[in-house]
Length: 211
Ligand code: 5GP
Image 1 (cartoon, helix red, strand yellow):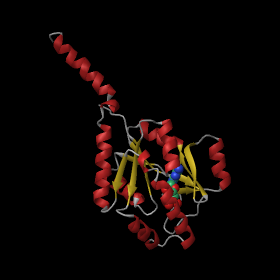
Image 2 (cartoon, protein in one colour):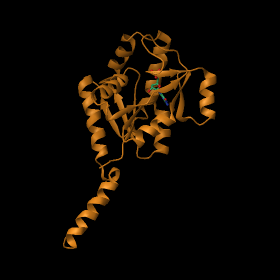
Image 3 (cartoon, protein in one colour):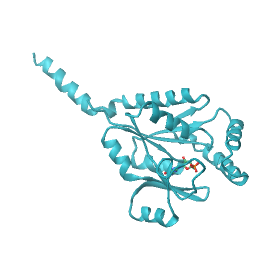
Image 4 (tube, protein in one colour):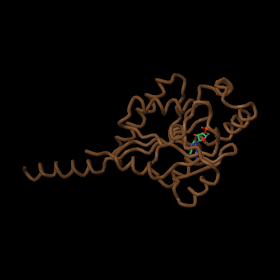
């Protein structure tokens, strides 16, 4: 019996390891999850591929996507646009896959408005110090960008209480399993299994009629 798939929004500070958690979920449970690939106007980092981490597009192309209502949500982040293509998300949900949106807080709140059943998870490293070390240590951004991202982290921290879950990413494997079990539990909520509930009522109703 089909249960309603979960639309999961995962946010986290830059350096929280949310990208690795998303990739880990996709690798371990490819049948259960669909990871949305966003459009962005920022440049690719070394090792990133167009169509895999992001669709890297021009400002003009991004603005066209907005005008044509092709994005579920979009937001500005440290000088660039980021947005979620609508169609792939709707298609995956209709196929019963849990959809993962790895997006920042403004976008998360917009999606929650449109889809009140969406589940919001916030990922954090064990401490602010660890966050700073990870961001500097990965060496993919210049000092100025790191500074802007740390400032953004302090703005994001005050929004954490708008999320349903706060998950600490200390050990990657543990974190992947923790997110997976949260989403499994969400999927078992009766509100997401209305068809099965109705069927059980109908079937057991036959017993009281003496069948
Ligand atoms: P990064 O440049 O580090 O890949 O991403 C910067 C921020 O943008 C991250 O917090 C990431 O979660 C967020 N982000 C990525 N894609 C989207 C999107 O489609 N919409 C929104 N609102 N944020 C996004």
